[in-house]
Length: 209
Image (cartoon, rainbow, N blue to C red):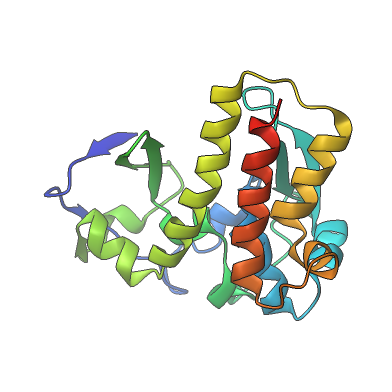
């Protein structure tokens, strides 16, 4: 993994004709953010409740003590991959949009890293990118912005030093990941506003005594 500065450039392209096409969609341990879940559910035209039940598993993160949602593989492959590529490409989650980059936020600082995996032939392509141009081209800016809101919850949990109860963890799971269930218990109709409110609610919860 190579650290990238804003001025750095890298070569990459991915398309159906490349020999490694779809190889990056196998054997994944793909954690989803709340915004990922919302976008994927809307792309499939199902509720977030249905999406979570059908396509994901969940556990409590050892480092954060917060709920973690992971995409469930089918025969060691992403359930949405086809021979022609991703069947929900317009709604693909953050890690898939950013690949071959990884985005790490430490405080207010954002750092990008370039991932090089043996199976991936995209690095030998001629197309050149800066981290900023790649993020923009892949439509990841809105994802990053929404994910940063969720990062504020992680930061708040770390500051609190609290161990959450099972009922608190369930409340945070509902408020952040199951937007449709959260909306049904509030008067909020807009998806994005509901997600933002769910994150704010969760921050208040972890900071409460």
